[in-house]
Length: 363
View 1 (tube, rainbow, N blue to C red):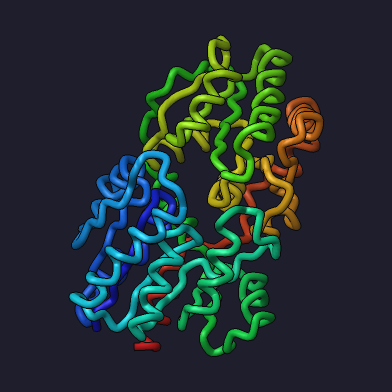
View 2 (tube, one colour; view 1 turned 60 degrees about the vertical axis):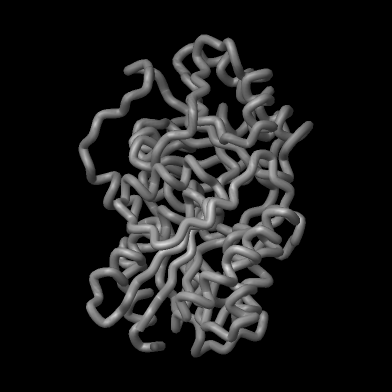
């Protein structure tokens, strides 16, 4: 049985690494891996640290690349690989342009497509953009759906997906997270030993410009108001994010702007942080499992389980909401403890095992 895994970005590589390892350990499965390199440097770092073997590298990344051009390049480069490899099943994770193109290319060739982390929905195609539309379309194209939670499964069933095609597996990011978090390795960042560290990440396309500027202004005000707080922001390589971050947050003695971290260092920074402010989907899954509250710089989330559990709060990009929620966590020990319970509804660290078992049953 030949299974072809497609990865394009750092989060995809992190979440697919446990699955790929399972497939490679199975003597009855020929595991092949394609890297589209939708993100180059950030993807390469994860591939190296998780020691993933890449069989084909499409190298599609270009600076400030429009989505239409990226989509065209991906389809043009993926199709010959599918023709040459002729896999029984293709796997991809999440909701990026890599994933929708892999699903569409498989549909055109009549190849089974398995969607890892299937069924996430905000029901608003403009938020997050373009991810919500991507995963909704992939939900129609996929033949096999690996849903992380019961709520994700229910979203798929409501859209008419055959229940026999849906497996609740948990999220593979918890598999990777628990493995890395258990490693006792030093963190090589200039973080003050007594500071309450706030980990910041931001990159969403729909927040670029005025919304992101407003959010960054609130974060700078937070640093101004709390002498014991240090903000650490591994800045996304998007040139628009980078320019705005340095303009608004730069030159502050207690705000550290650094290059993107490899996943191992990032997990160590999450463990060291007091809480996280982010617009990332994956961090909404990871940080609560480490007992770290998350303030989400979005008005909607497809990770509704964490909000219902009370370990994630949506604050959007409104400065008043950001400051109010952050100050509550910094000033109110009971409010902090209520969100820092070490609870994640996204899995037990065995998602890859369940996906592997489902693939064997299917094929």
